[in-house]
Image (cartoon, rainbow, N blue to C red; front, side):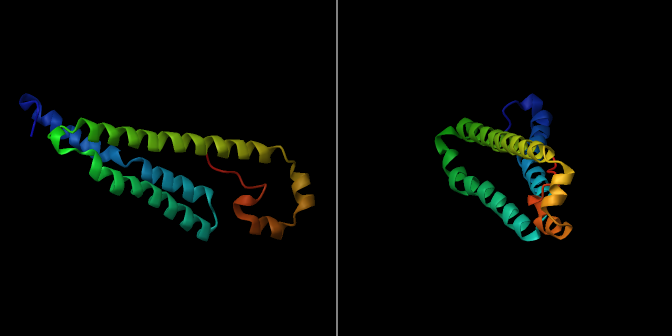
Length: 138
């Protein structure tokens, strides 16, 4: 159903924009996690948890917010979906960025000499993202 018959092309194009932007945060968050977790086992678990948390809402909430009495526009359903997408992308990304920046700043306070006195090169190599020399990508 097209709500504005004289703007059917614009409405059709908007569907493509919505489909392209609906899950745009998932690849970005997945890539960011992959870069910042160098250990393959931890990376697999982190990405798996991200996908799990991201899909829980769709299956459990999605089927209950599109109320039949609101058809065909579903303002509650679409409003909730857009709000959850924006909040689900913006809040975790902002918190993640803040915490990684804070950790990078803490590590920058340590001098290179102190790090090499405290750890051997082998220990630093085995520490992965826990190494004081590792910097998270922001």
